[in-house]
Length: 379
Image (tube, rainbow, N blue to C red; front, side, top):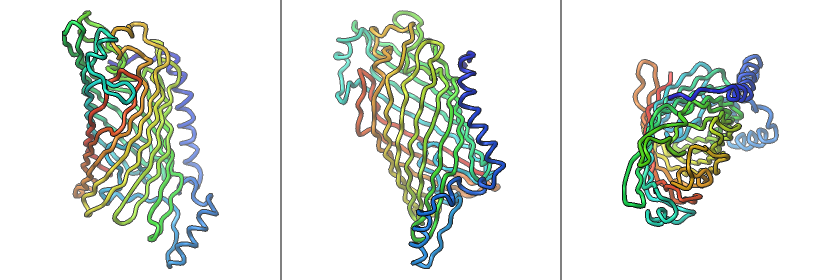
């Protein structure tokens, strides 16, 4: 079910969307669009690099470098907005993500069901999330790549009660739509130093996910707590920056992304801001296969405000002040570059891993493992 947008949402959307559209339009009328934004502006750095490679008989090249014929030209499949496209290029992606959560935790310590039930009449015991992400990217010009993402989410959570009863709740539907512009900042290339690229990530998340899923509980049909909801209910600003590098057999990257909530939703609360830093290295073994290792750190804040329909004394998932935390995951992945078909570059990718550190404002369910799989094609 889609949440109707009120006037406040529309106003906040305009404040974020208009600058993004305006700067995209400006970029089309300037010669700078034929290269990354900062090419030629980092004079001392460029001269130093040029002198270094000239001593080896090489020439430093500034510009835009995208090599779709490599299996590792894209980051591991769990990374979004990792690369830009040349003008006129179009990419479609389908991603599947499964996350399994089991047992509760406070801080870095695991809690038994009995410990949670000593504080609350109901305790969540485990949760499964499935996400199906459809996305598209388009090279608007040589500087700007446009991106849109639409998730479909399914969630299920099991519970126990103090008297010993058990029950399950479920929710599902489309989540929040995300729109982004990726701005090429700077790119250099030479045989001895490899290829190095930087781009800026600017995006918005629109409140299209369901904020009031219903399901049966021991108290009858109820609005489900925060973790079972499918969206934020607010327009969110999504800033970030991405660096990627490449040599003939290796590639690597570092990305920092944030989510900043704008205002509160119609039920009187806003999700906490969150920040994500991920770093990876990949090895190209042949022209069609590469493997990767990635570390992903995520930090998320408690909520602001509260949904008055929920009783935070009943179950910890209804408490907006028990939502924050931080987590470090380690992931391993593989990319397969398939034979070109009718002009389309095709790839299949898989990545999976688990947390090696979790610290949450609990009781909260702890994450056990995560797996990603996806298919991408570029024209």
